Image (spheres, rainbow over the protein chains, first blue to last red):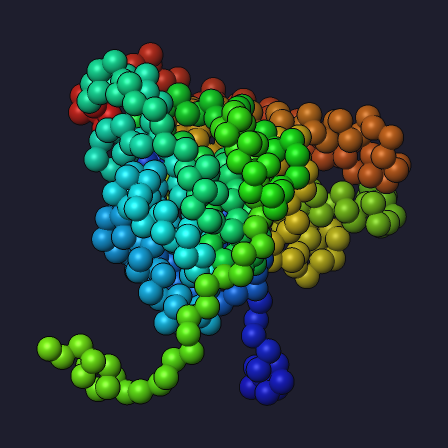
Length: 281
Length: 173
């Protein structure tokens, strides 16, 4: 028997598993990114979204594989260029919820400049960076967030270079929401992602996501992380002091700003042919 | 037949927690099975699949006992002592060369944690029906501990160099 029309019209609430595609992740066993994928799908279910209303955009690297593992629209783009692609998409299709996935190499080195300007533009995006302080996909080179004294065959004695501080950079550049999460807490991470999506403007979540292959010592992160001792602030000065002086393992929302999200000027309409004409030399 | 505690708000909340514990454990074991299937460690993948099925059965039993048709799609994340439920294996417990004994060792730790969790509630000042149910669950977990210990005796213990790989993924390995 057919279901009554009223029942058919009411969309069925989706579960986290409905946001997972049939493609099986190929990360190393024990990788933190599995839990981030789980957190993203839980967050989307929590937000009562539907896959056809969400786009996941990424660059290159282990973490950037995420779009293929979801049932949402996905764009696995160019190294470091996830944010420009996502910005274009969100401006053209403000009705979509756009998540951007990246890693510490893709997001802070190759795409470092785009990171600054995405924060400054404050387009309504949620930027999830899985930070494991190493280039995992290319076999363990130091990344911008690698500790200066981390010694390996590829960087004997360490790089001696001071680490990049993504949260402070995000704050200084104008990000409207800043949080730190831990992949070992997928439920907590899901809640933070959902909160970031709900907050208008550019939301940045740094997810500590251990690389068990090249940085096995990061298994110790689960003992180091702890909830942020104080509630978030909307005062950038106070947030800067807190973020600059914390131990790097404070988990939670650290800053929530009040800047209005970028709104694209209303489109004048026009056909694709009109657009083509504008680009003709 | 054993008399069941009279359902109350706190009892239902306790059972919802118990259900969430089983559900989280099921999801994690299934995730582990998937990871090891991808990495062609089929024997351990199969074992994790079996553990996931066992935990799923426990979850189903709770639903049946409570006469709940289903739980919300995303049960609320409770404030566990750790970041996840007491029976959930840590996400980073895997190694691509691990053997069945290692998987059982993980399961043993999880069952022991769950047993301790329920024993704690049974010894607490919680309402009597909750304490009674917690005692029952602690006893069940103790039975699982003993079953896993027996299971571990039937699988070979790994050699000292079980994780030696002549072509390791890490250049520092």
